[in-house]
Length: 512
Image 1 (cartoon, rainbow, N blue to C red):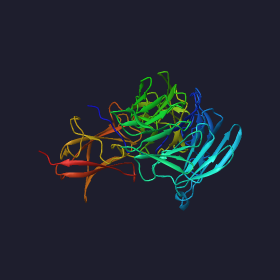
Image 2 (cartoon, helix red, strand yellow):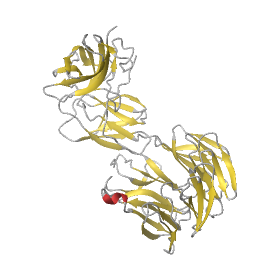
Image 3 (tube, rainbow, N blue to C red):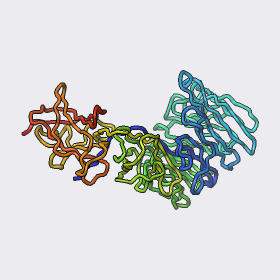
Image 4 (tube, rainbow, N blue to C red):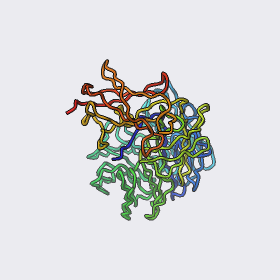
């Protein structure tokens, strides 16, 4: 029986694509991402514009923490108004009380800069109106970008915002105290529409004449109130065309264009969809960062899936040992390089990827690793932390403390429900034990112990060598003392003189 060995891993690489924006016919797509490229793999947020091969970087943050950060792209239907919302990070008392967003854009070639008063900014489809609202003061403003005139609006609920703007400046939002309602706002006038369920999202047509709202089960037109579409599967979003004669609705994995009944089944859970204003094409972004464009029912994968997270072993990684990355999702054809060398792949699953660190890898310099994949322009990188000397590291389930250990017959794992009998042999796995002799046994002194309360006992190790069929992983067979008490215990192993010690839990029962 084959077991999946998962080591406790840390040092996360978190990256994703988000905040899609497109023009009227879907010919331009902008998005945010903290993916880098092989030429510039730094994990900082960028505003990208899609281009075949390599996306065009429209803005790059100088660093991921204190520099100006892009928050959302701003793009009008005709493409003549374009820019972004940015924010300046702050650590300390100001981070919760002072609005730090700003809008920078050009409209018909003229620059426009605005220091926001709130934390939510929206642009009308024609690019003329900017809406600014939300925490900390709950007030709202509508700015005419052409004239610079500002209209103060009644307070808006910042906790569950659903904002949309028509080309005449008419606003649609949820009611202040009622999530089961949406409100039409024109200047200081309000009209409220109540619904039987909580509102997921809402939209208004560019002409301001028709309003729509989505609940988990139904898409509604609000004026007059009528049901457009009802679903047995919970709906998570929708998008109307500019004319209002086409609607895109989606659930966790399915997208439907209503008038043509085009159905797109996503291979991954959907995170974001966007319908172009002309209703002829739409974009689907999944949680696995797969970006697809569908035109006339034909899908084109713009960017294939790319890992959103890759966590590296921060303990027990030495030259020659196995390096496991966890998080994913990991496609089969990833390439992981360090110091200009491709690290040999050992194995992979959707949520883990294993490579071997070369025996001659330097430990006196700061190494890093780079993750790329064929067909994708993106890359992520991070430091590769290697130990100079062998360091024992016991495998556990990811972010758990239970040792991955098998019973003597290798037919099942040792678990709290299936403890190892005292006096029996268990098999468990480690990495980081360093060089081995001709028989495959570690050269450095190696020992393991079992602990329970104040009791400590050295373990007899009839086998400690490279694990059969694995690379960079060591298998250890240990005999549990026959008189060892039942209950949760601790395995501990160390290699070399006065080394760091690795711990993992193990469950023992009395023999039959």
